[in-house]
Length: 132
Image (tube, rainbow, N blue to C red; front, side):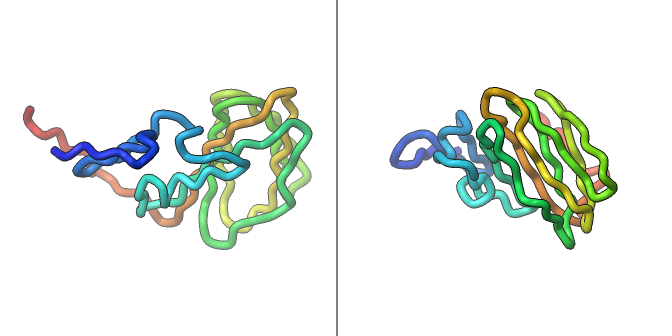
């Protein structure tokens, strides 16, 4: 097995794996592009760091489901039916294609959101346990 690291020695790559030891290893700013930095090809994935009192624009996705995991902070998510829901640390939001939504930070600290997207991706029976 080969273990190599990037020049800044934060993101590590081996034969068949990649590892970022922290969100900060993925860069700085609001969007941390996980997919290209770690070589993910099966689904979209980003980390979004939103400041207090900030919000996304009202938007929707036409083809993919979006899953939001709240890693830090608290958010309100508003949907096209007019409902608004508070989601805290450890909460998960699933948004289906064509569903308008807005994400607004309600905590006094930044909200760190792990966001994943994909379509038609269920793979049943794909877990195998190699002998060690």
